[in-house]
Length: 239
Image (cartoon, rainbow, N blue to C red):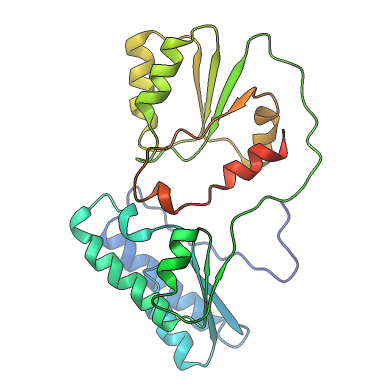
């Protein structure tokens, strides 16, 4: 989609294969440098990265307004449980320095109110567009569009495809759980389970408009209790 006229997307050219301490330090340096170079052009600083405390402190010192987007329970998203208390402190630091906190889920809204007096609840949404339904597939189709993170119930996906061989299951997205689904598909010889990998956002509706059932196979845990999944609104759009 085209970028709005007064919006500039600043991307680092450095690529990392995994998130580690070097990645976090390099990301902080890039953010600080980019902010400093554009400090005279910036009135408000919008952040959704809990590691940007250095940038937030600089923004405060320069008198900028800070808006913190609280879109996930960052403290429990980590694959390193021992770091959860540290991440909680980072979230608390973002609350303290923000002039406004925008929370996308009720649970996040309630938590943010404990650390900031100026909090608004603003669920995710999707831009309205006319999505015509495509040709009907020959067989019933269940679709999943998601980042395939640890919150995806991959065993439920494989189990459903095994139980209903007359239904096609189409999985769009990538992530660490994709390998587990792939192994489950091979182990059960499931020809009705298709993994399409990463799909560009503008191409998503070409697939979802042909779903008979749009599915969000989340596990029930702390992460999924604090989300406002954009895919839900995208599913609604094509129904």
